[in-house]
Amino acid sequence: MAKITYVEHSGTEHVVEVANGLTVMEGARDNNIPGIEADCGGACACSTCHVYVDPAWTEKLTPMDDMEEDMLDFAFEPDPARSRLTCQIKVTDALDGLRVQMPEKQI
Ligand code: FES
Image (cartoon, rainbow, N blue to C red; front, side, top):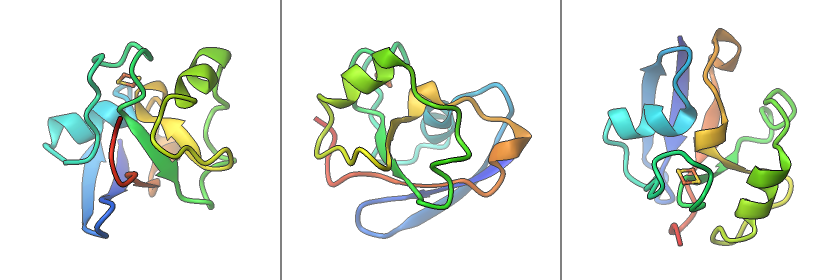
């Protein structure tokens, strides 16, 4: 279980507990948090679950694979240092306190 803070582009924060084994995308979806659309349902095929990870957390996440990296090219204004696809980040206790910010829009 991890407490995750999702920050909308407007600055509105949503703090929710997400169970281990779910993805960060599923945590947003299950709690009706706006700003993460996840059109492909988590198949790493759409880039609409894009977020900017808080700089304090970028090094603590499991590194992205080639598929995620390629798909991020299609996201809205990706930041090479902070962008991730939330459907590719599995929640564990180690993610307790994670903070992610949604982009202005999802493509
Ligand atoms: S939900 Fe489509 S890439 Fe993450």
